[in-house]
Amino acid sequence: MDTVHASMTNLFLQLGLDASPEGIKRFIAEHYLSPEVNIIDAPFWNDGQRQLLRELLNNDAAWALVVDQLNESLHEGDGGGQP
Image (cartoon, rainbow, N blue to C red; front, side, top):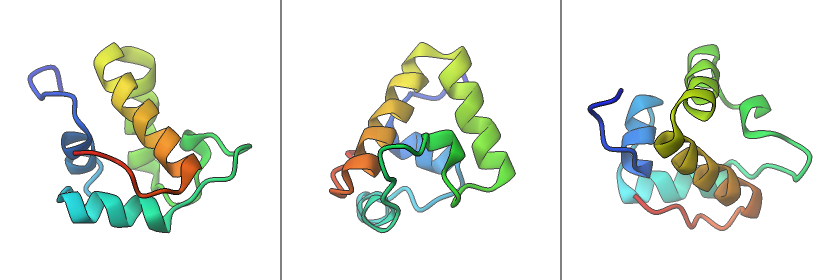
């Protein structure tokens, strides 16, 4: 993963999700998280996605920033994630 630029688009690609700007916006709009739910504990991730997010948060500062951006967007429920 070190050779891949840390961005929202690439995070979605790594998660196996639609990484188009519309796909990212739609995902965020459809997957609101309440304040008490940690992004890692969100019910919509499969085990592989959850493990990837955990590794990115724990091991890579650049990727952790992107995961944090997704986390904030999911908690805001505004569909405002940027590729």
